[in-house]
Length: 248
Length: 248
Image 1: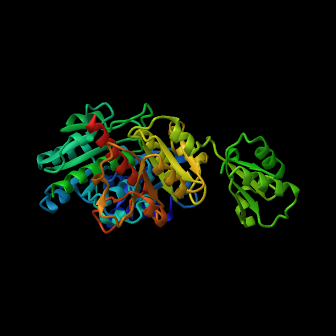
Image 2 (image 1 turned 60 degrees about the vertical axis):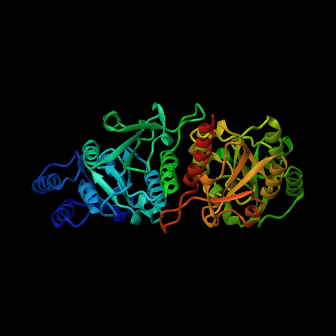
Image 3 (image 1 turned 60 degrees about the horizontal axis):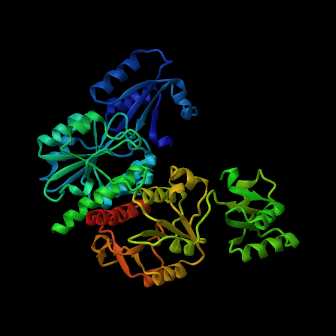
């Protein structure tokens, strides 16, 4: 974790929340520190601004031992996230596409996914604020600059985000190994669609599968069934592009 | 570099070459050591067996400082490579596929490529013995076990390998950003084909482009034109699979 990725110490974290000019991925508070006025104020401001805070074992602070962190750090995003409403209302979407990540944990995977999405002309990427890697300096580096060419939309609830998209005439496509249809059986060239990619091991959550309009799989040619999530996305997203370009 | 990846010291390297039971990726010899009978014998046996050896600055030995290497180490492959002839003659190929790597340098990329190839049912991967990452323990690990499900064919000359393939009724498809045709314009469902993927920065070598039957590109939707090689391969290889499965 590079220095630029964190703000540490009660005063600095509190000031950052008051100023509201930094994009905070998450605030970590040691279980071993006692609450005081400042900590309470931090929790209050975080809650009011939808910033996630977690109480964690002091071992989590080991990577930051060189900093005088007083048992509290805020992880900072190198980019500004976009709001879903802002994305939806931002322009008149015609055959636009979104990628939704549900539990992608690896920074390098997120970086590769961002690159792939930019190359394939995806309009935005949605990540949840919990149980998914956030944009950090490793992601920024792995994306090889692509991070500056696509909006990253952070939401507190993927279920709500999907409902909002559906209410705005977007179609939701989830990937699941047990699906009947293959990903290329869907017609992608006449709708706004969002593709949900699941965690490397667990796949897409049941609640999201249930809310989806289509569930598709990549037909695996081997009992060895473990495609990296960025490679799986690449197969699907370039098929959607193929269909769009063929239609033109 | 893990310990299991190298054999070090004159005697051990010489014995490995005499026994011929280990797959050697490359022998590194320090420029600072004087030739003697053993070194000469090592060079002679390496040459006779097509094993690459390189004279390198002593700084290259820094990662192995803990070993008593005497200025010579052999990098060992965790897998046995296959010969191209053995692959071609091994079975009656009908609509089989190969992936040829030309200058892929990153171990993680090779691991991801191997996983993708296995999932998509590719029949083999060809790598050159020079200017391309070899199979090492990082590749093995990143491939998540996929390395055991696909033959890796190592050749000394990609140009010769391509000629051999063409002589045996295989078609060669190279990828190049400046190609006119898109990768999905080729009909992959009625031929044996090999797809050449180039180095992350330099692309496919001119000599290989010249020897190819088709040159194709992935249509990029952004001036940001930098798809990771494993993601590029995934887009193409799953399109070949889509065509094959659609035909069935």
